[in-house]
Length: 318
Ligand code: GH3
Ligand code: MG
Ligand code: MG
Ligand code: MG
Image 1: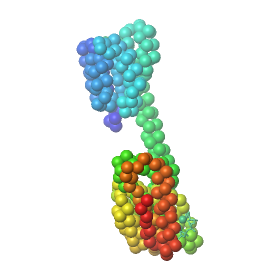
Image 2: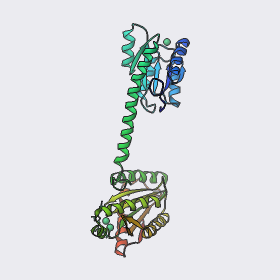
Image 3: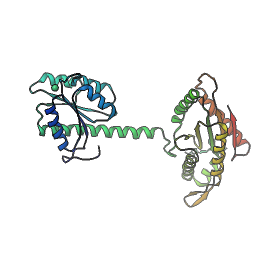
Image 4: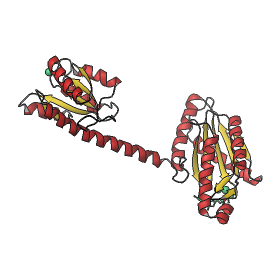
């Protein structure tokens, strides 16, 4: 999709659906000359088979064909998701307003009168390119917005909303596969003093560093970190029993305590207190309140760790 043709149009994968062999060859020749990649089949049923396995941004289809005609093909493309928008051009007989109307009604984006005029084909593909480029940039923006909406803007780890939603999914998985699930909650010790002594922007920098540090202390692609509140973070460890989560928490605690943070020329050290809890279902009915129970229990352990003197890990099995 990145390559540009001579006409300044993106090079697309185009599927031709036409039962007339000569027509198919001429059209494929024109499209290849314009720099596109072409696959040609003889009817709608064959087209659907090809669309199942490969993505085509543009389909140019005849209307009347054996087994499955262009109208049914077009309606099926609109009903199903073939991985991104498919721009459909319907081939119609000369002077047939009726065919053109039926094609557009079935969901075609554009029509092209047979025999296909080369210059007209080039113009139709420019229109297709405009629509497909627009669709692709909208999709990209949507994905960027979606990715941003689950992250905490300051620390770039997941936000509280995402934690609440995803934890329920993790609990569902835990019940389905009867696998353990652990949760660590940590809170930076005496953070208020850091803010009061060095200012809020240094405080912010420390929060970022702490989030980054925690993300690097856990298994990539499996465990995940979320900002629970001001200077509190949650680490979710799927497929992990309590003993494993305690090792991870202790490693994070010790690592953070010995990590030197460069806060604009000032070298700072911080510590945090950790609460760890774990849950493994056995022959139990699915209970989604377990998500909130895990957070609550980790919070209770964290409170205990603070009470016992901070910079330590306290755990409990649920
Ligand atoms: P403890 O060891 O008991 O946890 O003491 P603490 O001082 O860390 O706890 P406390 O809850 O009293 O203070 C938390 C502080 O975190 C107060 C609040 O201003 C600060 N804080 C919360 N969110 C942010 C933030 O986004 N940026 C900065 N710089 N500070 C924040
Ligand atoms: Mg035909
Ligand atoms: Mg604190
Ligand atoms: Mg706190």
